[in-house]
Amino acid sequence: MSNLYIHYPYCKQACHYCNFHFSTMKKGRDQIMGLIEKELEIRVNEVKSPLESIYFGGGSPSLISSKSLGCFIQKIKEDFEISNEVEITMEVNPDDVSKDYLLGLKESGINRLSLGIQSFFEKDLQLMNRAHSADQAHKSLGLVGKYFDNFSLDLIYGMPNSNLLDWKKNINLALEHNPLHISAYALTVEKKTALYHQIKQNRVMPISDEAVKDQYDFLIDKMDSEGYINYEFSSFGKPGYFSVNNQNYWNGKAYLGLGPSAHSYDGIGKRSWNISNNHLYAAGVNSKKLDLESETLNTKDMYNEYIMTGLRKIDGLSLDHIKKVFGKTYASYLEEQVGRHLDQRNIFWDGDYLKVSKQSKFLTDGIAADLFII
Ligand SMILES: C[S@@+](CC[C@H](N)C(=O)[O-])C[C@H]1O[C@@H](n2cnc3c(N)ncnc32)[C@H](O)[C@@H]1O
Ligand code: SF4
Image (cartoon, rainbow, N blue to C red; front, top):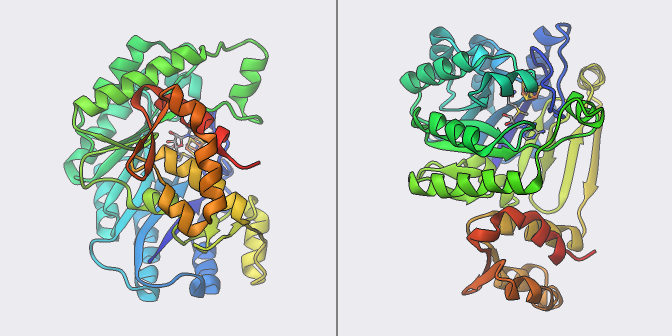
């Protein structure tokens, strides 16, 4: 089983917090899907049928016309075995939503949408430099709900100037649209972003870690009370609606990433990624000499990744799995390291599985880092 990821590397405007690969230039947009199709032809043998999920991310893939998307999905269907149940997700920006576009997406084969709402507050959207307004956030969700059952929405918490009361309102407003899934991300202030410079120059004030934790703690309680399962640190889904793409990624399954900057993984330790430059990517595809970099993870890297993803997931991490895959030395190392966090009740054993306790969930990445082998 494998998965396909397509990275569409263009956006209308640059959000101030975003460090993903995208360009706001108009040049090259008409050619990019043709280039990605060519890349697929070159790399088609790197993925094995049947496909379990297809994911259009970015950038802003909702700038792709539904016709061009339909042709691309048709091409994938010619190359791979795909059942009708295969999850085909597209990230959609609220300002790209219209009835016609949604119908076109349905027609092309997309069966799951992920809407980049981020916030329902105008002040946040302006600070983020989003291309959509609060009104568009609501209207787009209203329309999406009419044409798609299976949709998710993204929210960002821990924004500068944010407070718990507004965050509560944000979650309640999101829930009014009955999404089957919500991803809520803690704001990461990435270097090389406008937001990073605004904070450095004291033009924007970040909030404290405790205030971010309060927002996260409210989120997990509220989502639980509304019947969503927090199956991964940032991901909340109604039963049966967890993202197949994301789960496969966290479970170390193989995926092929197409498009500038897209990462691929062979499922057994080799990771590769395309160049994060649209022009050089095009040159590589056209000359059939792809500008790919790669790394092979060693056992220690794979163990550390297992610890990180394992603790972030609802299942936790399995000691038995560690014994079988990494060996007894790694399992003994883990058993030695967990002491302090067990004493502090940050983590607990549930049979063979090590899990993070609810009150310490916000600390998950730090706990995982303490268990790494350096
Ligand atoms: C790369 S974006 C692509 C989706 C689409 N272009 C959009 O913005 O609506 C995917 C998601 O990543 C999240 N994201 C991007 N940068 C982030 C950051 N610095 N901190 C937290 N979340 C971030 C946002 O929630 C966003 O919806
Ligand atoms: S958050 Fe989405 S729309 Fe904004 S710059 Fe990043 S990829 Fe583009």
